[in-house]
Length: 583
Image (cartoon, rainbow, N blue to C red; front, side, top):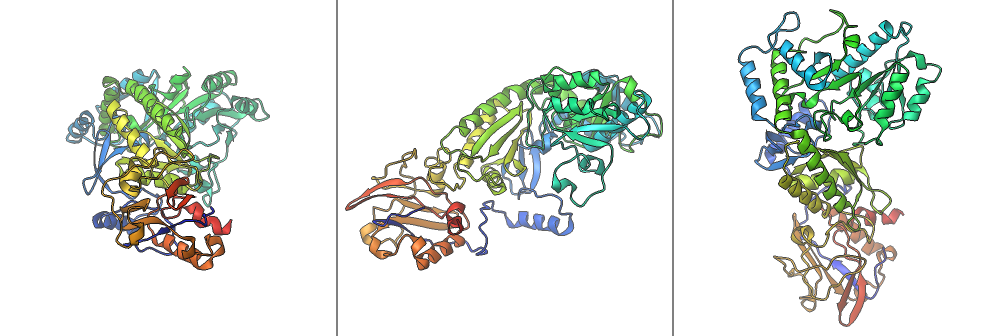
């Protein structure tokens, strides 16, 4: 970035927040001492196997959760789609409490009075012969694989020890050794081998690749193909229409079981009861979990035909908690809520509304959103591509922090992707409010390249929280909206008398103040900073002292007699400016 020599911007800082001078963190979430103490306690005594957003929650109801200080948030993760019915649904809680007061657990050593009715209800609801109850999604996935292998040996007559299961690249179905044995993510596999044999992958959404594998030298040993109809953890990857239809045809042709992992996509999440329904196909084995209990307790299930299920005999598979009466009653109530409150239909309608709003945001000039995708209320935005944004993990994470600051919780996956999956009970008005939260949060994102402006950058959020612009002679260029005077504007007393009334930028927010005004080139005769080591050092020292960065806007046309020139509008410098020394 070059600075004009006839007029420059001088930045004055006060009340800066101290931080490590080597840190350029854009972290903006402020924690109370109570929240920080709870996080510190978890960090000290718990395993470091998650990287949560820094918020401590204590209450949930419907589409919202509350932190311990009483701040409310829209939940746009829904516990990875486990609370489709909404947090703490009253009907599900009644079922939980009533059963908990009678009997919670018997193990499968004895019959209980809830399991039979539960199996009948669920198999009828989804159209399968039999159900095997488990607890977690990954348990259900492993159960499906065991069933497929046993079926392969008993029915397909695959030689003992040779049965193979094919998975799709980018899959995620848990963290057990079997589950990570199918993963291609180094963070899931590094340091955890050796892995389970008999598994292989083909590219997702590539039926030709599956066909080649099934017709290859070891094709006769394949007993099953396990796939997510929409890949959730991979970033809400939606396959082409007809992909699952081809999968179904290939599995039928080669006598291979089609296992649908609907732990995250099932139960109305994608706008149909099952995500497989978008292609009108029925799997041989259906794996359910998460929202099967409405987020109240771990409940999962494997549904399949008599031919497959009855290959497992007593003593060969099970779980102490699987099929417990508490889980049976809770899951039954959760499915009834899904059905009676038309949540699948609402998911379809609200999902279309959400994607339309996100698409509109993505089309704003300079928007960091490069892609919107999803079905129903399982959606994602991709942050960054070749349009001038840097799209690293920090930016997606920071957007999530910005949204949290405005009352919406979401979390990145794979660095640049933010999954947006609210409870299915969300209303039309709430979706509109959440789209506005996302819009305002995007407007606060720093960006690197001149000319890359977040949507509505100069109006709304920046006006109220970052920039109060009140010079009458400010125009616009490169598509930047006209900057308008803000409320609470003031001229810092440190501005020279001759410049009073002329400064074109001032901000007082988040613990620091900035003001910019035109001064003569004689104040810095060796400007720009690339040629002045002293001013360069001063510039970087100032940048390091600022905890929060407001991004640069495109050059603003400034007219102040006797100087007429173009000024880059630079609040605290963005990462791109800071890195220019090494470019």
